[in-house]
Image 1: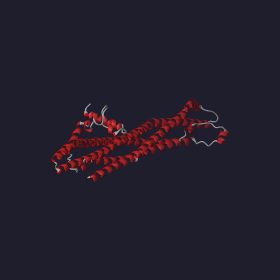
Image 2: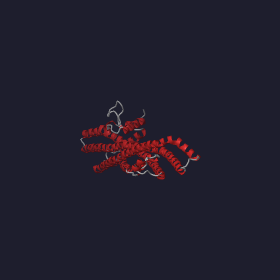
Image 3: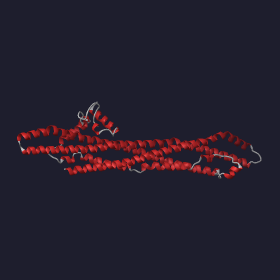
Image 4: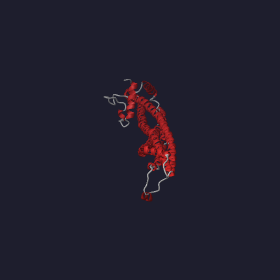
Length: 378
């Protein structure tokens, strides 16, 4: 396995397991923290960048620590602010309002109103007056038109969620870039720290002690102080890197919720609502037909002419089709269940976004503190 593939696998593994131990971030199987260095698992390109940065670190200039890695941290701070703004987007949450409106409208529709039943005297006397056929037809036509408009709104919301997924993917890639950039700064600093503590400081200390030159001893103390500052800077950069590690799974979680809601909307728009609309059309056609037959029968009290007999025969043949009303009830019930599930998923997604907003805001505050500490340290 090449160094580049090593780094890719390690990065992907850690992003998929953000709760793993940070100390094991760059370990391979069968290896310990002492045997694996960050620089060894960077891509060749990033290794080159790390070596160049390490060479630019001047132990005689403590102020180089102020700017070291600060640009990457400030970009990460700006990125955190962008993430907060993104999870606060209100248009993504409109799905819940549309689904609620659609459920409310469906609850107003009672398929049993499409049944034509003959009532006895006492049943007519004590039961509620039933709606006229024209009233039922008018109500269903209005409701169907309103549901069609809501379907269009759902389609638009689905497009918003799809765009949101693409934007989140871009944010994920930006986050991964910051993660890799911070690794370069950390690797370079670790190499410099190792060089100073294991080679440069011991050598200079030995020379100073042998010469007895107090100025050289002071120079050694300055090197030790620089190494201490470098160690603290490494810690600060690792804190920043941890922010990118924690942000990655949150982005993926929001994307997953969006995809689930999109699938539910797609199922409603492409399958459940068209099926419901089709069965409503059939039931309304049957209702009109039976109403026409009954009206004609009333107009022909003496006898039924050939046309009425033919219509009666049609009614007799279509009588089994009244089962369509039961099918409509079942379809409407399934549609309501699907919408309830969509609403539940959307509400969970809203809660996850709110939680992500709080956590990212907290991490943004921590990062600001780190940057303030760096500025006050020098």
